[in-house]
Image (tube, rainbow, N blue to C red; front, side):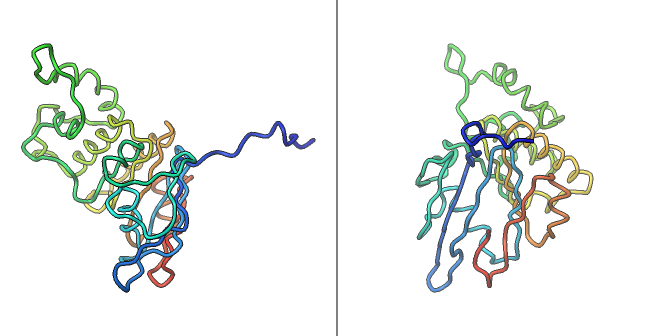
Length: 240
């Protein structure tokens, strides 16, 4: 078989997000040194390591909560400076932390729309009926079965994770970062989460899955065949 001529070869895929040579120190402690991360659309990556390996620092930098001392971040090949969580969201990144962001006394639909622009009626009131129609495909996609008028405090941790994923999709996130998502889930709930992650990947949404202390085989088998391992011990200083 003749090789494809160079002029006809497909161009290399451009990562949705690429971080290179990231460094961050706190006083005399170096949390990151030369850290690199590259995530293509639809890829599932595992950011895995011991406590203190720098996982949280790297995530905080991507989220605009911490500024790196050195290095560069690019979105679709374009260098960016992420100065705030709002800017991270505007760039297409959504972060679901272990301590889930929801208001217990608000309803499911209100929590899905938490912090998001909302449709209004001609009288200036929030048009919840129209919002529910708009987000119905996303609710079905992530498998939310709880009544949309149920209070979030009445739901399980797994159900509130689904609310957070739905919120990210309403934001049209192209990368969802999940911090310790299975820490409080049962085995069955974990399987459902992994199925959702595979569905996100198939639709082109990338996932960065952060976990402490998992092995390569367990995280890759759980999340996706495309899952890559990231994270080393503190002594290496380089989650790569």
